[in-house]
Image (cartoon, rainbow, N blue to C red; front, side):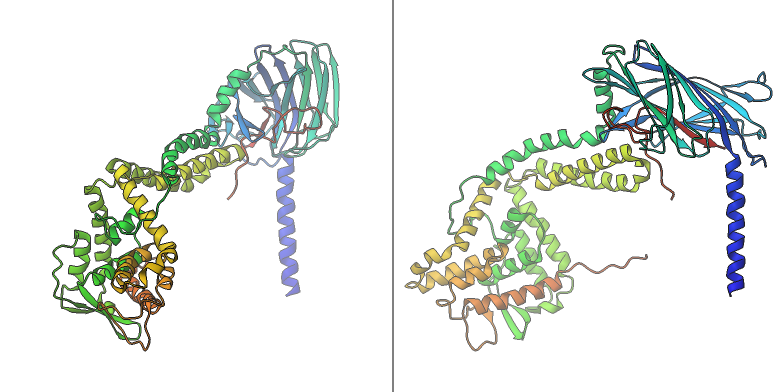
Length: 577
């Protein structure tokens, strides 16, 4: 076993050494940058890159060159305008053999990428590549006491060593101060040779730049040296950060719509002693919460029993059946009639456990209760349509956005992703909160809140019931379904515990003692039976690489302790292909 492990270990070591050797042979032997900063806020750059392919060949066609199209400052993207003026390359041994503008350009994840070379030709000797381009809105800062050029001369994105890097920068005014940073992204190492006279700066990083190392320069210039393009950049930054900033106007816009809703909530609620004559417990539950709940179906069944349409019988412990009475159900509203007809479709006595298809009936009844309120102008059709549109649209677009997250890689792009996602969440929550009630609907709603207040504080009124049994029985039973939709049935029963001690005619059960609390406990068991019968039918179902950020670690001034390698604007990176 040890011999096998030793063999595997030696084989892996040989593989990685061989791979590293080939990789190490691939390098840039010279990287010369000539940079001219213009007073119109453009920067002309010519990069002359001498690339040496592996000695063993390696099937290389040319180089890949890339530069950020945006870079981030304090979490916000700033746009870069890039114009490629020319691209050319030639073998180092025969400079006259020039190939011009043979490249393809692409935009990926916040990067502008050039693929330079000929796919039909392999190179086996050093080649010189010259990229002439112009930047705008990149690497220029406007401080109170000076203008500043904060530029990545070589970004920390080349995956091979770079020897003999150097740069000359020419400015439209004399230089006030210079600082340089060398190394990997965010490095503060200042190992640079700096020489400047008047408006010309020569800079050389110390030693070889290892893979994914670069160097950055920050230069102070007199105020006004470079045209102030702040307003232009602010406009372009807003467009570039529209995804991040979008939640702000959306929040303000949606807030205005919600004011009316909460103004309605702030109205004084007065206790109501009776439900509204135009509603019943099921339509009231829709008006109150506008969501399907099987407990509200149970409340409606209790209401029909109280009104004498049938008797609820507990024939075994926690087992219930409904026994039809002689009272006709023709006066019931359509949504309650739907429940009644479905229950007694096949007989006058029905066990709750046998109501196996009751979910469809309950759902239909809920929809009919909605329609019942629509027909009485309690709900606004337009507002309901808007609510449905916003919720469905936000969920649909949100799902598409989440499944497309790969297209939002990098810190800046991820900011856009989360900004859009937050905006959709705001729209979704707003859609849920839209008050679809009309003025009349809000009147009914506030009457319900008054009824809820009365049920919750009934102890104040309990004394008036003691001398009028008919009255307290009627009040307790008629409001019991409403107490259920408010989840106050136990509190409601507690108020009548000592005075409601005779079983009602509409409920039969096996109990040795009785009061309102016993009845409500039995009704809660009944509700659980109804809930089981009202459940929807069960269903069965069959069952990287990462990307770099669009830009280096840019942000703020290069002076005052905030500078670093990769911290400025621009700065190319690349590889070979």
